[in-house]
Image (cartoon, rainbow over all chains, first blue to last red; front, side, top):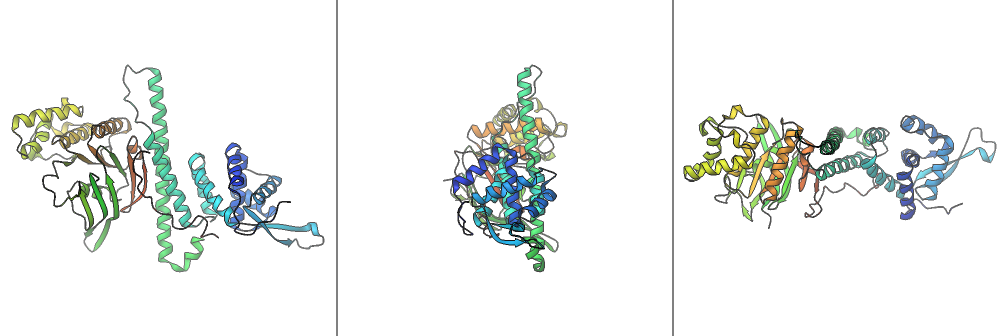
Length: 223
Length: 241
């Protein structure tokens, strides 16, 4: 049993790095980060989290109940979540029917935000995934805007680094043509991603303004 | 010292009872031979920013300086050392494309023969020499932009400002224009352009994104000086803690 961590105690940067590296190598490992998102959203026990996981993320990436428990163990071992008081299952007759609930540590929240930002760069499913994350209200609006800004900047940076396609000449070789077409494809795809980020940013900014204008709703919308 | 320095510039427009904020607190610097792109949607403030940078419009607040001197007070800079690539052609400037390009030089006192030769030279430089005898309304979108660039290059400026040179031109033809602007920057003329098409940032030294009159994102080549990004609103995770 690993030592208990106090809330807010920093996880080892190496451990967090290892989890990120695993997530990069193994797509299934990214499920652990989604489990972390759900713990951040609402502290709970493994079974309830697995049910919420299926509702929120199942269409993107399914995860069996034992895998959710394994992800919780890994998150606990790396200090991103911590156990809270045992919650009795009704009717609670025996100790094994008590369910262990978890809450995220500050370090876990910080690592989660970093992971989302990193995913925005490489995951082709990112817009849909981000939209889903936003919809569950895991991140505050400022954090989401930061992620969107970061994503837009990443797209611009990639576009800036790409060369412009050379003119399509009649005497161009097939190799030159295909090379140009690849650059063309990359630029068009990046433009679409960039424009999505721009659109998402505008929607969120409008939402933020609306929240500012309606103070009564601020707490609900910004959480 | 930067070639052009824009510091904390703001601009508002009034239309009837309503006031529009075009720019607020915009700061950036442009160096010699640098290609800088402003990316923004319609009404983002990008055209206002470019007109202010070119000295065609004055800001309500903030300062614009060229080689350390206030642009509003600098003589013989606007239209000579900083030129703006207008894509509209007034009938007052002549019938043929060549006349339009030479007019700016004639206005500066360049003898007509020399003005004509220089006009032919810049039209050739921008790959539209064969358009010299055409009328502006005979030009297609890409040719029109290339002629606009030629006209802006004719006075041999240090900085060329051009608004939206790739709009309505098509991706493949706009690439030719982007390559032309890149080559102009490589020859030492700073290029400051705007676009609403993200592919327009390809090959630029720096690119900014403008939203609601504010610079929001910027990316740049690794060797360039770092311009501060929009600060984070809070420490990561702090608001959720």
